[in-house]
Length: 173
Image (cartoon, rainbow, N blue to C red; front, side, top):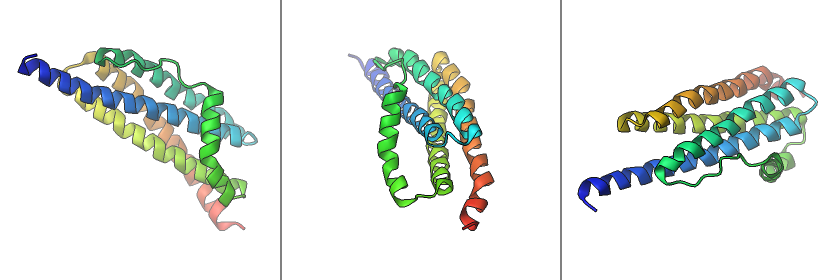
């Protein structure tokens, strides 16, 4: 292998690792949104909007699997199924529920988790977009440009729900 091939392989490994991490993170974001939806069924807006925007992350998982093939990745194009996601998120949220029994506090904690998770996913999309642009990888860049705005909307939704519920939740007894 010559130097140019070695460098291309090294770059592909780094990009592949970034795609793999984003694939996992999008699955986590979908799981968090479905978990919030499941826990807060009584709030119809939370229930339906969280489910709708979880589908975006599930679509992103599929698109990342497709572009990952160019980087020798064998990622599952199917997002984790809802039962698996919910089981994983219920385990993670058991600690939150154990400390906070009040539904409003649980919702606030859930929304904070969604916002932080979406913010991390957003940063990863930005890194991938900048990398794709530098490498002149049109398919990867198009994927990032299509998916990143949806992640920003997921983050803004969680943030707006936090603003809507925070003061009331924290001040009322």
